[in-house]
Image (cartoon, rainbow over all chains, first blue to last red):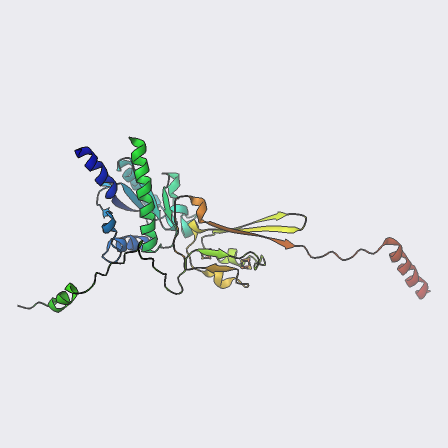
Length: 147
Length: 146
Ligand code: SF4
Ligand code: SF4
């Protein structure tokens, strides 16, 4: 019974980890504004965590620069399964305007499959909430599949 | 002792919460918001201006030769778009429009693709004169000069 309770609360409150791989800070500000009282994603259980080891959903921003590539791989390896990768903005999806730059090693799906992609430059906080709602469903499915 | 924010704090106790309950109450984007791209292929003249001004290069064009003319397809991959609206501003025919729709969170990458196809007719060929007539005309011309 205790286990069931834990299982249920897992699904109701996924923890987010925000990973910046060299973004211009536009998307990062939008993510932070989702956590503010105005949009308040915490009323749906999302909580921003400081450690990738605690995270269920990873929000990736930025086009993956050469400097941040190794850190990205290391951080993603630390996230416990099942994890959901959400790409915020156009940069991780396709490297956007930095396409073809010598210092950009994206897109993100070279390294990890993207589950939810939110387009926009930057996306509106409402769009991020939409994407998180989709991420929760995927997380639920992945949890069921693991059992 | 002074409490500089005391007035504000007391006021806020009686105010409604400022949270926007977004998924329950839908929110309109402000006027002039640049969201999802709409492309109207029937207005396009295939001048290529949009491809020229697009910085990330998210517009691609494929041209196929068919019997009726050139079959032209424009693809706007919104996963690579910066939503700068330059393509819409530069389009001489107003074939591109950035709408206020911001619901662009997708699980399938293909949903981010906006495409449109139209057929550009070849200019009509000049009517070919029958061989006999041409020769007659030439003969007449030759007769006149004599
Ligand atoms: S809005 Fe800007 S980035 Fe997007 S297709 Fe148009 S020109 Fe390209
Ligand atoms: S600028 Fe407008 S008319 Fe010209 S190719 Fe692009 S969509 Fe067509």
